[in-house]
Length: 172
Ligand SMILES: [Fe+2]
Image 1 (cartoon, rainbow, N blue to C red):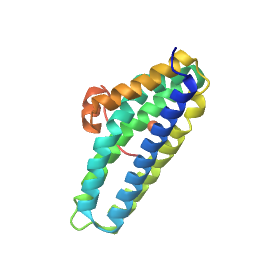
Image 2: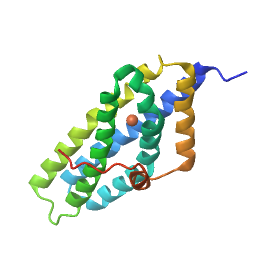
Image 3: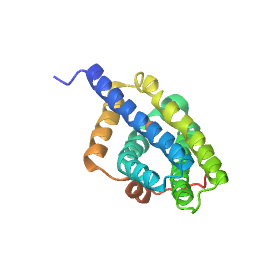
Image 4: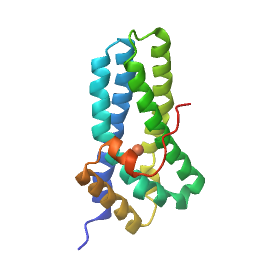
């Protein structure tokens, strides 16, 4: 018998939320480390982002966002993809800011603004479980499987960035 969709959904939701929580903490941590003028800490957090965010973006882009086009329309999906394009630009810029010597008040402000700009994507994305819950079970399963596959593959954010075939967008 196929595994109960509800238990698969719950397992997905727990993992998915954990990934968003980690992304949230990394972004907030980077803003704080900039304020503290602590480039080493930013480097650590960036490494964590690189390790953890690539697989998340991969299954969202490969399977989850396309599956949700049936509910939200293609335009919404493109917007979520563009948020990811921008995340690559933001990561690059935060890295640059962290290497400024000294890190100025303007750098801290800019970093804070960049982080504030990314956070809504993280929390909005988490809400998509409510949408996943109502699409056909078969499609839900494909998302859950895509997540397991991506996690097993373990691509970093930089590796996924090269593979996804979209250019980073400059931070706005
Ligand atoms: Fe997400």
